[in-house]
Image (cartoon, rainbow, N blue to C red; front, top):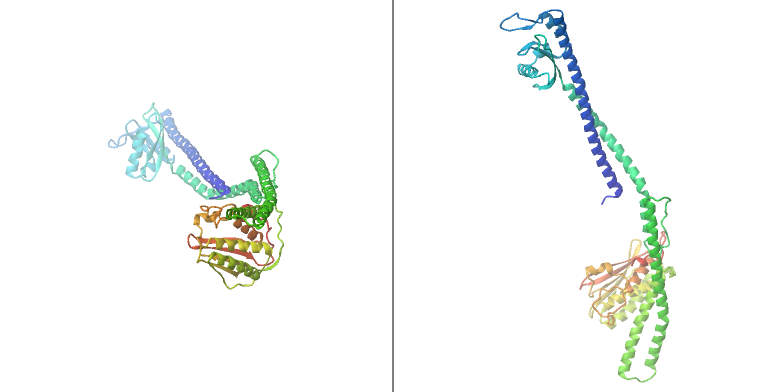
Length: 489
């Protein structure tokens, strides 16, 4: 989807194009009307001149109409014809029935055009002094003047209207030449102005993006002076962030305090149960009850320990002890534990040829990460299955992978795999042999991200899973903050 800046610029461009078209049409219409008015004035002036020549001849008692040929009928006397020939363009003088004189321009017309002009001239009346006539290749504007005192009935002058059409087309050509330049300049300025206007919005987006993790809620957006929309938006977002900070802080304090408070009584309870089981002979039912209580207590202790780890990481109070860690011996140590777990579960654990690699990190946390993945693989692989461990260098990273042939994970469950308290095996009871608290993968993801790495999973339901941990090898680039990823899970 296009950005607001692009959409606003496009809308402005469309509005500008529409406005320019309307303006050009209005300007062309007004200009053409003005040219037609000027043309009508010129034609009227020529008709007035012709009528004035005839009127002066009548006042001087000079015959206006003579008959030299009975076949041709009456016509203007030669002296008047010579004077009217000096009038430019088209000129027609008629009585009430026929034309008494036509100018040279009229005589030069084709017969069909001449007849159309004479017919249009004869149809003009004192109530309709102006008309137009279409010729084969032109259009004429006619203006008539009438004289009711003498033998001459009307004087009609005409001129071509091509000049008006030429001015309109010339104006349109100029518009086509200038409009693209004006449009390009205006759209460029609109794009720049819109970008400057939306720059505070981009700054707000960047600032809000920097506050997305749970430990940056103490930051606030810079709020400009004034009461415009952006200032009110920043104030509203700051108020929302303040409420979120308060809620997150309360939640973290509760998790940390509850985990801390539960840790001591669970430790005491576990010790009492172990002491009761070892104190002397008990009935079978009593030993079973104590054993179940011990297992449940151990599970609750693991849950509390995991919650305490996550809470401390959320609060930024969990530091990693970074040092060079050779991964090959660490993986061998984890593989030995995996062999023991696999033997007890009736499955085969294999280790692919390991490549030596050293990373900067916390050896204990990396061991916890690898062991979590191995434990999950063993837990969700049935008897006769296989679990394989591998360690390979990939460019500037090293990858530790755990593959199994277990029950696999449905594709719909993969996006939620690292969420806290989420388990793909939701249909099974917590007390089953595969029961868990749903925090192991969350802690594993935090450990991987704290070391600047990541965890990816590839799985198909019923065909097994492969978890791959990618860790960066030591280099000039700084390692990310060890607690930077936990709140995203």
